[in-house]
Amino acid sequence: MIEFDPTTKISDTVDIAYALRIIPAERYGKPVMSSVDKLQILLQSPLANQIEALVFGLWYTGSLEDYTFRPVMDALLNAHEQLSNIKALFIGDVNNYELGSLPLVYSDFSYILLAYPQLEVLKIRCNSSSKYYKYLTGMQFSPVRHETLKAIIIESEIPYGVIDEICKLELPALEYLELWFGADERYSYVLESIRNFSHIFPNLKYLGIRNCVFLDDMAFAIVDYPIIENLLELDLSVGNLGYKGAEYLLNCPSIRQLDTLDITDNYLTDEIIKEFNQFDIEVISERQKTPDRYYSAAE
Image 1: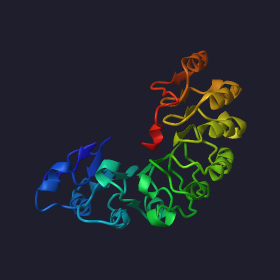
Image 2 (image 1 turned 45 degrees about the vertical axis):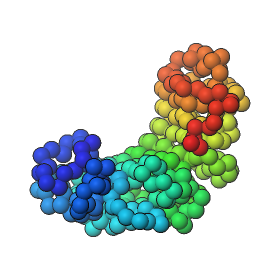
Image 3 (image 1 turned 135 degrees about the vertical axis):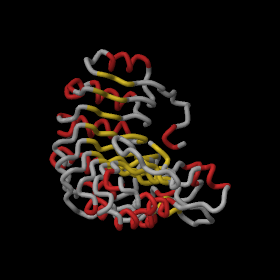
């Protein structure tokens, strides 16, 4: 990834993501150029139509009640003809330290999908302040069909209802789905959605259920649903998987057909880890926590 410098010409675009954001050193100088303005300069490059990936992080400064990416999304919609080779977008590359308690505010990402029919990867980051109220974050997906999208990644704490909306998308090429849930325990809506993944996304090879406090119940659902039979990689890292959930996984024959099982940063004993390591697959199991350790997904 390269920080885009408005004073420097773009010389290469292959396998490079250009980041448009206010970097820390800029915040102390005046004037500060917003990322939307940087995008307008980037679009003037003769290589703009060859750029493959863009990253948008902190893009303006000031006293705010929220942190909205809607102007960024509007700018992307207006620039879709010039950015005709974009294959990957990461919107919201902002950490909680930068934001404090401000929620990240978005709008309907299906407009982005429609504007960029060649898009293959869409990554979005939420934050803990915005997990409860979808109307506050504005994040949503209207039902659309997209032929080339291969990966969706929604980090931090996905707003309620968004998973159901993702299930209503027609994404025949989707192979990679990574969802971060957070510390809330209201999860029945998630289990029913995952039940339908196998026929909604028949080409799914990677499923990431991360940062999840109801991982024992999730493990039971996954091994009981057809989705497990098609996966190559199951990522259950950064959660609270314990003995109960581990038993579900250990007793599931389809787990042994995976290429990779990631159970990093959970609550598993050395004895349980040894049982997983007997499988003829790659098992990633670092940084197990003890029960008295404060749950890292809520940190």
